Image 1 (cartoon, rainbow, N blue to C red):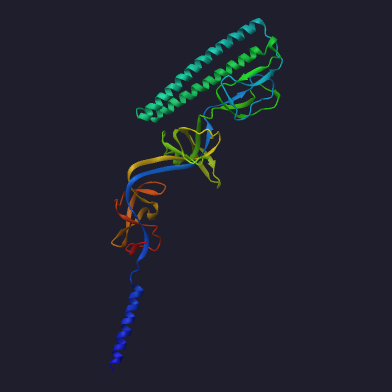
Image 2 (cartoon, rainbow, N blue to C red):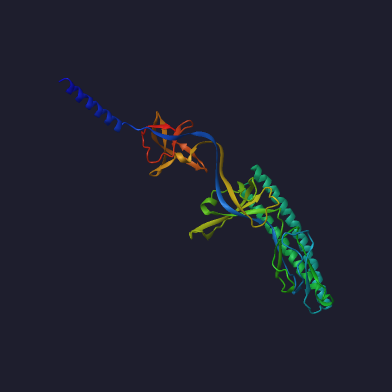
Length: 375
């Protein structure tokens, strides 16, 4: 008779044990990261294209027969080196009075060219002075933009003055007894031939583009950013240029953020507002040319002492951000206030402290109070 109650008790204990095993809290293995204090950088990343900062399109100054251009793209040319020759079309001889007036106009144009070159040299010197003061913090970035625009305007005036001189000289030299004498066009600057618009011999009209010249040692990079990204970019910001063909990233600085944007259709057919950002290269390599593709990484935030966590520890809970803080072997839901988002880590403004441990990639298995242990 004693065996039956013992059997009942044993069965009851087995049932209780099975129920306890079925409903006991489960401990989940998770990845754990520590909240740290350290440097943090944020970037805007976009494709860019190199281009020669100052390019010159050399055109035919007179109507006539262009002799075959012997230069090829990539050839180096010095200042005043001959570029091509044009045999002018016959023209009506000038009378003495008209010829004298034309010579006076040539002298006046040459004087204007000298004045424009002097003004350009002064503007370039002023630009370097302002750039140095901006780097020291003595002037604002807008002063650098104004000085750069003034220098660019002065260079354009030199080009216009030189074109006027060339046109007047051509008009004087191809009239009267100079008919049939080939007119030689010389290089306005030192550089390399970028493109040939016309190579073969043939009749061309005055103003026809023949070739393009630029200095490949003075390269810049233009990248078009989304307008909301461009609003976070400051003039003078550091830029890293990657995937240009070399092992190490090139360095540069933002010279200008264009004040106006434009609409561009993305590869997915979406209309986007884009803004061009111009970057000056610190030391462009000789293998880099005009129109090359690069990846620009523009620094928008850089501080050395920032409380931060990996991005994988954060998730949205409604309209706020949260993380699971590790406390006594359990995951505790912790709302946080975030700041700047880097590529891998996020700035924490409130909610977590350096030294706290958080769960990485919690997923749906983790809730507030779930037992956890580190993998």
